[in-house]
Length: 262
Image (cartoon, rainbow, N blue to C red; front, side):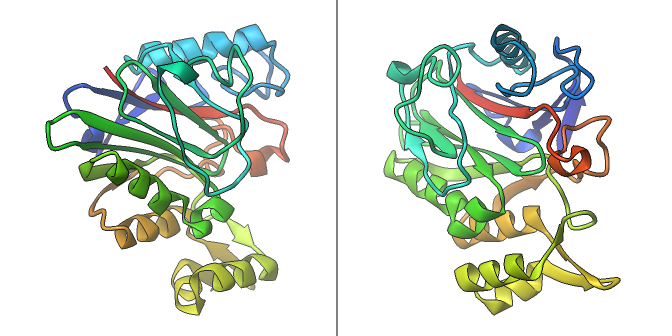
C-alpha cells in the first residue's frame, strides 16, 4: 500500500528502519511556470537551475532523505551504477562521468534520485546478512524495462550482499492510456518474446495499449522478487497531479523518486 502526504507518495513495503524514500507528484515545490508548477526536479524544462535544486531539496525534506543527492541525465538504457559519497552532487552541482538510468548504493547518507514524466520509477531496498541496507533507484521506461534494467538493479544489489529485496513501483502511464504502435510491439517481441508481448499489450478499439508497470513487475518477479508494491495511478489520466510527457506533448516538468539509507 501507498500513503500520500504533502505531494509525496510513500510505499509501506519500503518503510524499513533506516530507509527514507518518496515519489513526488507535481505538487509541493517552488516552480511557478504553468508547465513546471510546482514540483519540477528536471533541468532544462524552463526553470532556473537554482530553483530545480531547491525543488530537489524540498523533495528530500518531505521524504526525510539527505540532500546529498546523486542523479544523472537519463538515456533510456539498462545501465545501473554503484555510487558512494564520492559521487554526491553529480547531476545537480557537478557533472556526471557518464549517464545511466539507475543507481545502487550501500552507503548511508547518499540519496539516489531518478526522474520521470510517464516512465516508471522503481525504488528498492534489501538487507545484507549483517542487517545493513542496500538501496536502488531505477528509471524504467519501456526501452529500459524490456532491456532488463529492473533485473540488472536486483543483480547489482545481490552483488553487494542484499537479500529479501522489496520493490515499489511509482506512478507512471498505465495501459488505460499508453497507446503504442507496431514498432513498439515488434521491439517488445524481439526483446522479451511473443508471449510476453501478448500478455502486456492488448488490442482495444482498433489500437494497442501496453501495461508498463505490469512489464516491470514481471521482470522483477523473474529476477526472484515477490515483494512488489504498485501504485494504481496513471500519470496521463491525472495531469493536474502528475507531470505527463504525453499529456503535454513534451512541455512539462519532471517528477522525482528518491531513496536513502539514513
